[in-house]
Length: 130
Image (cartoon, rainbow, N blue to C red; front, top):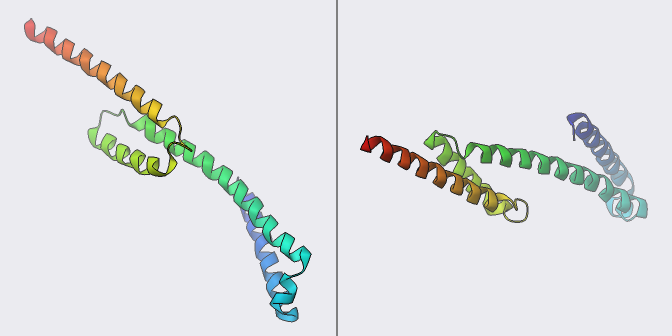
């Protein structure tokens, strides 16, 4: 959701809240809130805002998770350690429901690192015998 839409929703909610407060002061809050139209409208706008905000957050979370995972095989060990800690902290809340491919990615990364390390060891072994 872009910022313009969020601002419009916020303005509508603020306007409705101001109107609600004004009318509640005139009629008494309990009388006003018991009207069927008010009860229905009170919950519709925030739920629309929440659902679109949830979609936006889901997209942003997916982008962040992808960027973190792409950094895990960086040659800088300090960066990898910090990224690993961030992935672990997020995984506590997100895995497996919201991040189902995490384990497969990590297993593949470990396998790739093992293959790479074996290749490096073979290369070193060949160089040391020459």
